[in-house]
Length: 121
Length: 344
Image 1 (cartoon, rainbow over the protein chains, first blue to last red):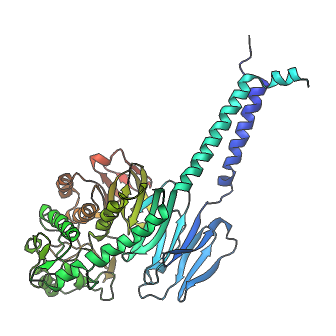
Image 2 (cartoon, helix red, strand yellow):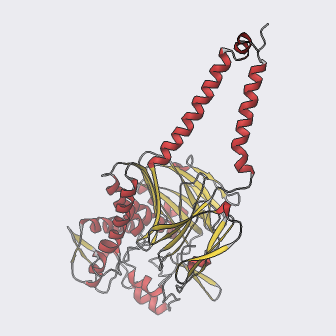
Image 3 (cartoon, chains in turn purple, red):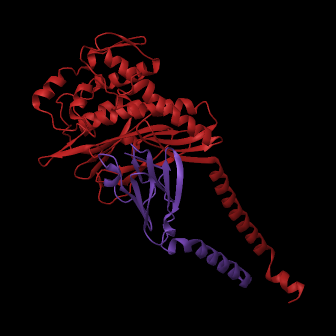
């Protein structure tokens, strides 16, 4: 009787399994796949790979406004507006999360790879 | 290894299997590449709120710029009570006498008045004097006195608004506030614009009110009322509008009590329903906005007939984290946060 599963078939199966495993390696590494965008006056001024941040840092996209960036997350840490709602919103760390300083027209938002296209709120 | 042995090892079946695998991988990579080439995403500020968009089709960048302009125009020319030359400001500044406005503004006001009639006025766009008093999110935000609220309530009456062709007449001292329908109205105007472009599909958020354009299905996250950075469930929808009203949006605390911004036009106070939020799905953005506010005030039971009137569906989130979904959304809603429970 002819063998149903030969050596060559085994070789191909192993190759496919190894390939599949390689595709999963990024998700096993703990990386989030998240990218933050800083938008000032409607223009993207910075794109930050949040997985690549090794040491937390801060920067000012406009005078009086400060954004703090750490691995996998970011937030408004200072603002010159009265209500400081953007600071109160705290850290953003998941896809689709957005915080805005409306008076200064600054938006920080996180792009990523989960399956939600948009949020209603 | 001679040629015969090589042939034996890599027989026809193996070569065929490898070819199929290769074609599959190449197809997936090419499809992904093509999709990324035809998608344009952007986030900006327009109409005093965050606008996010994802456009699918050609010339996305040009369409995105035009959409931003379109949304700003909705505020400046039509609906803002702050803008000197807007239709609503003209109506308010000539209260007691008829003001001539655009057909678009008349259409929006008519839709809002229709919802008011069908919910016995708990939602009412003539609450301008009342919202001024509370000034949620503004510099004058405060708890007004009962006498002040009673005086402002005296000006609230949707049935006083008279529309003839393109003129709008309001009662003396009456003030329109279209804030509850402005974002949805902007979604409707964007849809009209998109139909003249080569955009195949799009999902656009105007401060959380959504336009889903075209046949493409989108996964829409409903914000968790207890954590407005996370979603508690998703809706899979296409070609419609989605609006959410929730007590978490604007509020303040005074003497240990929380006062949120959704005012019941009958009492002049924040609506006292058992709900945390209502998400409405409806073909019109103006209506989905108006209905989400009206349903929040009415509560679950009284909302069902109102929604039916407009062929609209909804997801109700109660303060005790139970969730009710209307029949038309049952197969489209997926709960993603286990701290919520769907009630049959």
